[in-house]
Image (cartoon, rainbow, N blue to C red):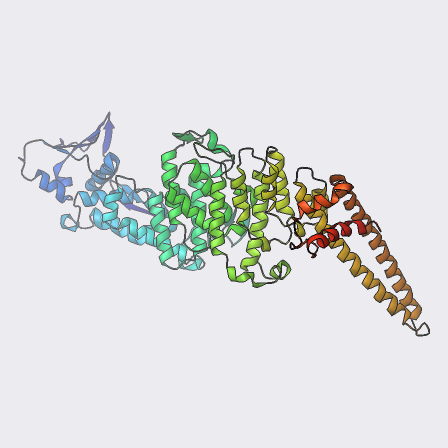
Length: 607
């Protein structure tokens, strides 16, 4: 740390109670009161250095005892003691921690070169420019010493702006360490750590300054520092990383567990070490931090933004702040994790455990950014061939995320059917490669809400496409008594169609293989080996056909448990809406013929 030594005399002041007395042997002729301390001094050393004191005492009688009150002097009694020592030529040390208060006090007392060479204004100004502002640590200490009462005059003198500019220059060109006298000379290594579940990168390379500015600078000064480095062209992701680091060090509630807000006091929180954080202060700081985040997309971690959103709800931040966070999260929702999306409901009249409305707004913002023109592909398989940056790839990730979210919140008995349906309906049907996730969510919701009517269950099941269920999901759905009968029949119908198609393809492959085998010349070299392989392939195909037939028969039996044989005709007419000859059946026929085709398809699986 830089240090400027002034004066050569030994200490001449001693403290008696709240009174400083000069021990030079001469009778004091000036009494100066600074707050709760009194200084008994001599006019000549003071007036020869201070224009303010000279003007104050110039009209008084030379023999009278002069009294003055300097309660407004920057730095208070401690700083004035240093000024008095300087006037008497006593040894003092000017450091980064006291130079700001000395510079402000010298300005207040008008200690310019008009009142002696090498006066205090000149000396402190030179020390600031030549030593403090050229060193990272000293600039931090100087800014840290700018207390609230000292800040206005320090701003007028340009001390704060000079120190901030000095820090910004060093942070902007942090990669070229040879240009500056920086305290950190460690090699550029990066380690990844978890802070309260948030993944952060700790570096001793170009981002070494994160910890210093987050630990020692008050937010108003930190905000100006960030705005300065941003204006100098520092990348938005670096700015966002610094703001993230600042938030995690100065917002204690940001690291609370998922349900910490339910028991927190509205007045404040004590986090040990005699540190007390007012909720009002935290709310104000959080709103400022959100405003400071760069406007560029995907520069801040989605997990961090979701934690900020949760904390803003705990602190009851403004609607503008929460809306800003929801928009930022919505743009990059495909990077979110399910656990972070489970935001507790902090409303005073909350009915549900989790804040469904907030997630729905976030999803709305994501859908606005989704490029509708990307749906020109014929199927999901083609869409999945695209890279991770393609909007369809992001949409598929979000669909899986929302399916998992609905499964988590579906067990809440207070969750209304319309709200569940509204959230699920925001996901386009064609972006899901499989509908197993939404089926699981629907099943969980129906299980937690057994009072739903048959019609409500049918409406809920419209969220899924039975043709896109996997074999395991179809097997589960066929035996799920909670599902509506209509849905169960649809599942069995589409699965039988799928099985019949698979059997037909296998039969065609078998016939083709037999023709190739019969057409081979055994006399050719290797012909017997090829023939043996073909026979082995035919055997495996037959075994597969047998397995498919068994599965088909099992599903048919499940269907007959639901429908009595003597009521087959009326039942299928009701299920598939077959009431007139002009209506098309699910199997492609019309009227009575289509109805018979649907029944015939099931009976054929026996033969």
